[in-house]
Length: 100
Image 1 (cartoon, helix red, strand yellow):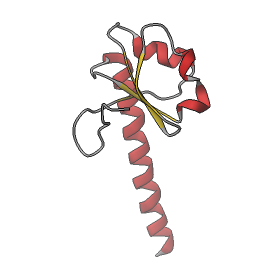
Image 2 (cartoon, one colour; image 1 turned 60 degrees about the vertical axis):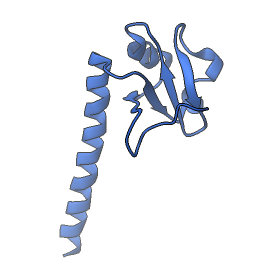
Image 3 (cartoon, helix red, strand yellow; image 1 turned 180 degrees about the vertical axis):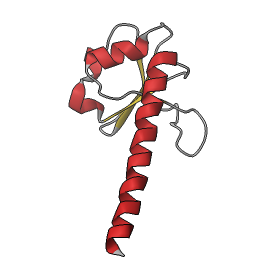
Image 4 (cartoon, rainbow, N blue to C red; image 1 turned 90 degrees about the vertical axis):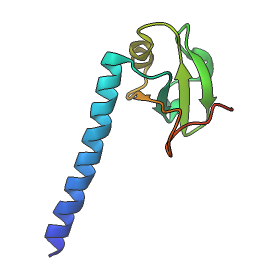
């Protein structure tokens, strides 16, 4: 019984992780969001070291919301050192608030 529950939990975790990786991969190709969200930004880059043309909408020790009006900005964020870049939502329960 415990092994069955552990398999169920492991499967659920794997599905969630796969969903987030797939979402980041699709965002890398399409760039179909007004902003990008990166987790633990201070671990990978300082706010002053962002690639040219990328602005900070919100930055704290847990996540950063970044935006650019130039094509290819998601690729530049990956090149700058961020391991995963997600689309930032401006509405919904997991949205960011535009105020810093």
